[in-house]
Each structure stands twice: as structure tokens, then as C-alpha cells.
Length: 344
Picture 1: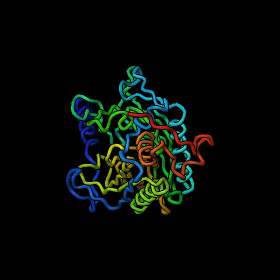
Picture 2 (picture 1 turned 90 degrees about the vertical axis):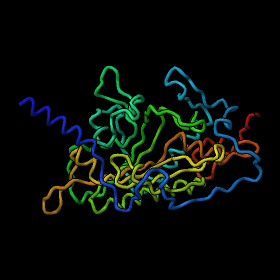
Picture 3 (picture 1 turned 135 degrees about the vertical axis):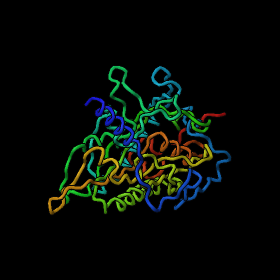
Picture 4 (picture 1 turned 180 degrees about the vertical axis):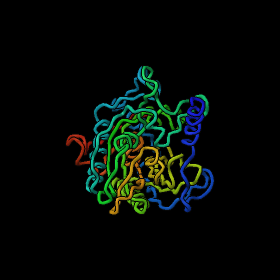
């Protein structure tokens, strides 16, 4: 009997690695096949001869510190103006999302690995060397969450909803932990860090509602960046960029003029029933029949990259002028203050 149980466990472990089916509309191929479906163009400020990076802009503010004892070269602490900017961004974005009828939830940042695996995170190392999540030394079956999506999924595990309750839209703010490595100089400092704050949207719905929910997430993301006044583009991602759980995925990339690149600041995915089957999340229809729900997730705001895009876009010859959308969320003595950029 033990032999059969071991074989079953091995079979089940391998089955968990099977990815979701791609939506028929998804283009087949790698990142080069990504299709731009919308772009809000960048309009340069003629008064600025050379755009600086966010880190160069805030250097003289003494508002970003890099304490190396916590997480190495990708550690950072925010003090004063930059901390105010991050808080303003979250307040602004949360207002937009809550006005859409989302229910706010608070979730754990420490999760069982079986949950992250059920959400579609392959626990194997990406290249055989670098892990893709932080494990707890004293509790090896536990890990730090890489996104609030997983904490929300854990909260919903094993639940059965009445059909009338769907769709259900949730939003959660959390700290995200990722042992990522930079691939270029442009990804240094605040761009690719080991921990950051994120506001995550999550939907559970009937199978016939998930495509609409995904579109709603993308529209909310576009609305956020339209109101901020930052140039961006929306990409329909190809098959090799979907990851295991997504059937379809859109990325939103904001333009960062100091870095002279578009950087991913949010994504939105329709995971259909991939996660719900692994987590046992179902709904009961009017006839009493049980079916698996569909789940969708989308980034409302990721702190550090959003700040990079805003700082680099709204820098001025004298310093930095916060975008109009954020000024009511900033301290009165800072919202109109043109902070001086340090000389080269």
C-alpha cells in the first residue's frame, strides 16, 4: 500500500506542474510576440535637457537609505518626502479601487508553500541556483508571500459560494518578498528590489464572467495611470509569458524617462479554474450544482516602480512637482514644494 501511495504522491506532484490552458486569443511565442494594444505617449518637458533617474532626483533629499544588513544591495528605507509620495500613491489608488465596489481584505504575509504552489508558483528554482521564494529557516514548509494574491487565495480555500454572491471583487495591500536578481544596470536600486508594497485586486466569479472581470481590471489600471498623467502601454502577453496559472495576461508598462525605458508596473491575469481546482473554491448554482469558480488577479499598484515612473515623469528643471492627482494626499507643506535636485 505504501508503494502505491508514494506513486500517487509523485504523480500528483508532477500533475501540479501542468500549466493552465492558454486562451485561444493568446499569441504563441516568447516575449518578442507581445502585442501593444494601447499606448499613452510620452510628452517630453522641453525645459529638461537630460532626464535623471528617480534615484538621482531624490539623492539630495536624504529620503532614501540603503541599509545593507537587511536584504543586501536591494534593501531600502524611505524617509520623509519619498515615504510621503508612497503613501499618497496608495491612498489615491485605493480610493479608485474601492469606488468600484471592491471589498478590502487584510491577509497574511507568511504562507504554507502548498498555497503558493496551488496558486501556480513553481517551487523549483528558476535556474537551479536562485530560489524564487523566501523560505523560513525554522519552518521549511512556510514561506514569505510574493503577492497578496496568494494570501487572498488562502483565505478563500475550501469555500463554496452561492451563485448570487458572484462576482466578488477583493483588494488587499501587503508587503511582497521576492529573491530576484537584476538583469541590467537599469534594474538596479529601486527598480528590482527584494521587498515592496503592493495593492492587489482579486476576483472570483462564474466561468462566463472571468473575461469581463479581466477587462475590468485592465480598465482600472489604465484609469490609474491616466489620472496620474504618466505615459504607458498595455501589452497582450504571449504564451511563454503567461506563467503556469494564467490563461490570458495583460501587462501595463509605464515609461520611465530617466531610465529611457518602459518598465512593467502592473499585470492582470485570468487564471480560469486553475487555482480554484487546486484550492477547492466552488460555487453552487440555483439548481444546487457545484462548479469551480474562475479567479482573476491584477496589480493596482506596486510601490517602488510606480514611484520611479512618477518621479522621473514629473521632475522639473528645479526639482520635482507632484502630479495633480496626488497633491491632496500629500502633506500641505510638500505637495507644492519643488525639491532641489542635487548637482552631478
